[in-house]
Image (cartoon, rainbow, N blue to C red; front, side, top):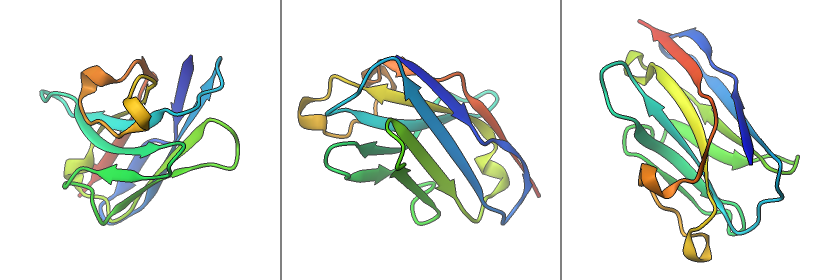
Length: 126
């Protein structure tokens, strides 16, 4: 499975940005797609995830209410729409796939995810 993240960039605080993640190499069913981020000097942290089959979503408190994760019309594509961006949202954002979750229950632990994209940089200026 290959994951390709895109959509990052340099934006001003208060702006919006949409990240995309395209999966290829395998038709993924009953899996969870997630977004994580890592800021300089910090550990990678969970941002949001969606259970592909159920459509359920879960967000970190830091982005809840400002972000929306969704499935695209194209197969194996997931989006992360981020609004009201803050300088503290600056990070490299990674998409990841958890293919082993029982009943596609959303898990937030980094170690639960099996496949990772290369990351896309989001920089929010104040």
